[in-house]
Image 1 (cartoon, one colour):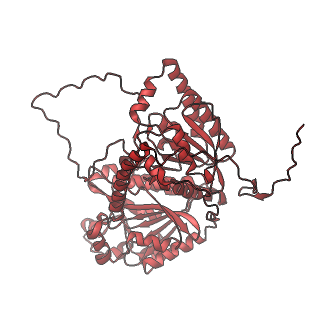
Image 2 (image 1 turned 180 degrees about the vertical axis):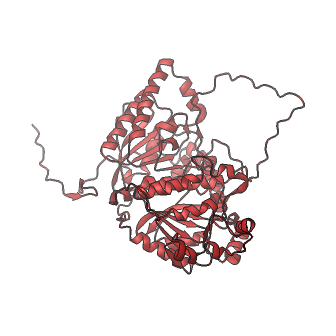
Image 3 (image 1 turned 90 degrees about the horizontal axis):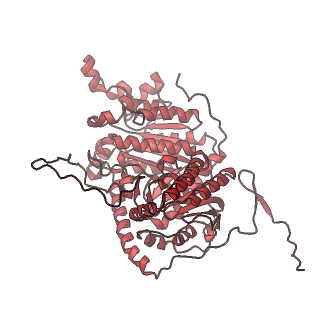
Length: 561
């Protein structure tokens, strides 16, 4: 009989949350790299990917430029204000990273292009604490907010609430775009929802802080008034429900904006603001000081770099392929996780879903990646795996990969009726598990997302903490594939022309494209594929900050009584 060598107990360290983790061994086997750089398929994909990445770079530059030279000149020279992106440099720590959200929002709108939706939203560190910063961009049409601006800001607030991130509002807005006012405040998810959300987040223990660096008029006046801490800049910050022109029209009185709702009035008389700053720089110092009082334990920077990293540039080439196979999915996973180490769960059960455990920056996560529509077995496996990760409090990374729409529909049509019914049951089980879990969820669209993959693989309807797309991917929501022989379209009656309303935009994105979804804030942005590990790691660090927060929820928000 062979004797087993006795092993000494593994040295242990206390992990965050109190879990003991072995330090002398590295868990999970190393994957075999399934991406061959000499493959002709990847070479062809590389050319298409380069076109998509160049397009992304061009659109990013347009949005980063804000209102362009004219808007910048008006903002800086006439109004004597700091540029919005320079404000971020004063608020955030000098060495802080900044995860910008929804940069391409506002392009392709029928009422005209609004670069970055006239708003800058993103996550960075203030005194080491991750905060979500939302800043009006006064260079874009003087900070006017459009329906897409409302959508972007509400998504930012949702991310703040989900991840328990203090929310810093930098306010400088000319008010709503009046031709679209019916789409700004009337409905549940229009502008008024922001005021509701501010109160709900404050009651949940998510701090709300505002720096008033410009005008807050009409409904916009409630944005700082609903916050817990407000600083206003003397001479340029104003808050009022009706401005001087409205006062003159209603009463005949001539009054200046500073007298009506300036910093001195609100700091000394109304109490709407708590701090009066002489300059924008001073206001941002106040904001930083307020964050320092929150007592949130900062998440340490990563001390676990990627060892034996695979060539991530191949992900750029891979993104140019029409479809990504299950074997190639392992190549993606190996380039995201630490040391390409991955322990697959139920490898032999289910043909189109990969599930398993890995480390990212030394922290264990659950990974799910599909390669086509999920089968009955895939749905059961996914449901089982999601429940395990919830029980073990492991964050989840979803790699959405439905393949081409044609191949996806063909696979669906190729199933028999009984098989379709079984698939429905399996997917429903996975959706139910996904809807009820509370661990962080990060979704990346790497190869298209079609039909009910939008639900099983954590699309927007299932509230991912973050959701990003590779360029060139597509998203469709049709659950019923078209029939094999689609009916012919009725011919148009002679002499009758259907007039389409002419769009005022320079751009026209296909509705299933990642660029359209980014412009409509249906995802949080488009990322360069080779930077996927960097983005996922950053998101996971942000999500971990919630673990160190000790302040409990309250019955009410902080009220100015």
